[in-house]
Image (cartoon, rainbow, N blue to C red; front, side):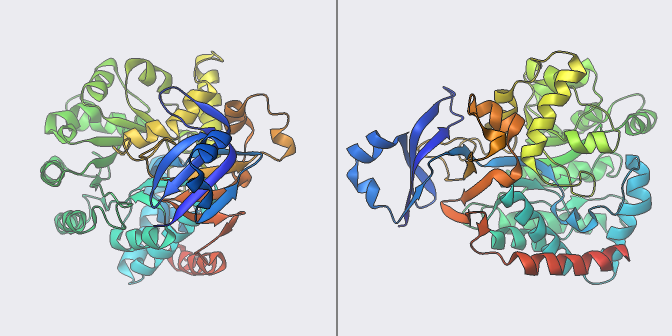
Length: 443
């Protein structure tokens, strides 16, 4: 079994004690972390660790658990910059859905989704994301890209109820869950993904709920993103919110992650907390589409699960979780007029261990601790904008950039070393993605 020793790092463990270890070492055996401690003590007491298959000298680097992006549409990298400066519903109806229908109806969906997802994986790994939660069409192709890229992921096929073959697509998604859950030695954990209440009718949502409970997989959906959506649902369902309708249907009887949740009532928050519905906070996407600012500080005070996400690259327009952490922390300070509202450590938690909890993977990722999967990012702190090093946590959230990511380890394997990929031909990925993007958008 391969072994890997990281030594002389500043290790931000994200454990219960909020421990930061100076001159720290991490010993990895196979897929998992076996030991964490001070370099002199760890290597000195257990001299066999020094004989690891590979040793990484992380002097002047900070080791952090891999970032967890809890909501995105990976293959929408193909529409980056294609539909900007528009409100959500016109953006969807006039630009995004027509382009996706062109892909689905013209016989190149498998190839387009594969290369669009590969492009997303390249971007995410390079910026320190080691696990992401995805919702998109042609889920087999997307999952194959995730496997080939070596990343950890939660794929699911989006269900749009207005498609004429929506029931058949749902059954295919259910079969996909049976087939692929736990693939790639456990890196792949699947979900079922009804797009939203305004696109999926209650009968199909009940089938999703029943299948999720039967298979033991979570549900991934959009909830209460815009005022227009709130008005539409209230008119359709006798004044109820989407959260209340979903709860009445029983969707939340299965573990659920809901993207956005920008507009909520006290009753909605009570349901989210009681049903342990996780909220994916997408600050950049919500700002760019002028959807609003989700009440994240209140969610945290009320005990609602929250993680940070980028959303898709068509509405962000990047997949940079380092940037998203910083924006989340700053946005809620100004939204509440309280500079303490979302501090740096909490922002870091939302992007690591709490993100893992949102995906129901908190026992395997989100911390640097013995027994956890070896998903680790090394940030190179040898940079002017990270000097002087008064506070490592502060720097990671308020000063670091995606370009500071030096090394990325996923499942115990080095997938990015010295900022270079070890198993992905990035030039080929960009060329293929550009080709299918042109077919998809007609540009």
